[in-house]
Amino acid sequence: MRITPLSELEQRCSTLQVLMRDNGVDGVALVQNSDLFYFTGSVQRGVFYLPAEGDAMYLVTRDLNRARMESGLKYVEALTSFKQLPQKLLDRGLSLPQRMGLELDVLPVQYYQRYQALFPAIDLVDVSSLIREVRSIKSDYEIAIMQDSAVIAEKPMSLQRQSLMSARAMSRLLPSLNVLRVKRVIRDWYGSGTLMRNTISAMFFRCRRSCPGVSGCASRWLGMSPAVGQGQAIRVSLPESRSLSILLSHLMVISSTRPGLCQLVQSIRLLNRDIRI
Image (cartoon, rainbow, N blue to C red; front, side):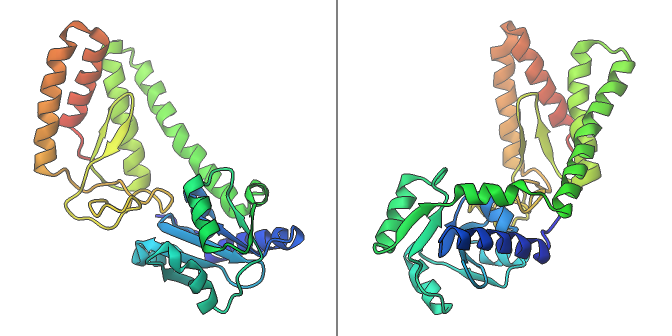
């Protein structure tokens, strides 16, 4: 699992702080997952607060231990209630901002109203353009990740070319491609896991050994990356396996007069028979 280096997080924070000072913003509070990951290295539920001067704070509502494992920031603390946010800033020795920036391009109205209630005397402004400006300039670390992604994306294409060269019937080719594509890429890049894959979507089953996930559900594994903090399972639990078999049996009856759906169900059955990586 790739963990964002502290030096990378510090550079991103310092770049945003320069823009904040230039635009008269005293502090920003971010909650969107993509912004949390970019500035903290984790997507555990909480608030990222960055003053115009000083160290950033990652206030986590769930799960604190995992956030500390994934984020290299100096101040990663618990936030048991959103109402504690002003006091958390004061406890850290920070003064309450006069102008606080929010992600108003994506922030729900309900969150905005909660900020208004917590900070009635301050001016809430939009800093989404500042965040986009920071993120638009890629570091060497980010470029290396993009290059790795290109390699991962190329693997399924090479597998498809190999399968097409064998000139198999299309009815057998599609399920085969799904199996090979998912098993090879997951095995090579993400380690072993238990996966069900069809031509529409993919899901990782609940594992018997688990850790806190970003959704707040305990029955999750670490996932492929801190950016997607749940998903990759170790083994399928027995009740779920039985439920899947029952579901497939019902689908086969429904799809008997629908060739397209029948082919999809056959693909799922093939994957369910051989999903151990």
